Length: 104
Image (cartoon, rainbow, N blue to C red; front, side, top):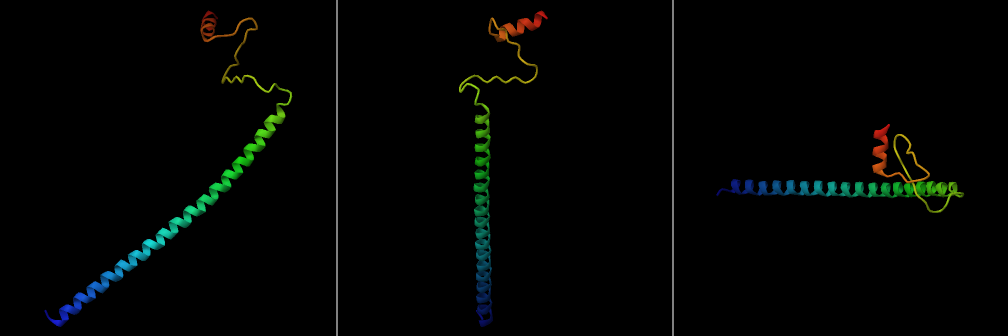
């Protein structure tokens, strides 16, 4: 091998090492960016969670203050659409509901 050929080989090794160093630096910068972004979002999550807990506590307090005359335990009925008709003599069952609607 000639002396010029050996110098070329050395130059290629140096160029490859520079490229690897640049890629390692780029990967490090990206990792730092991802970590900083994750920390920023976790801080925002904690603030949002604290705000939600505060709002929920205010709403629960208002609901309990509004129920002062109501019994502490009971039943909650919810029906979407027409109101449910209740007989005072007998409770309404699904079977009696379907037959009473057919007879109308």
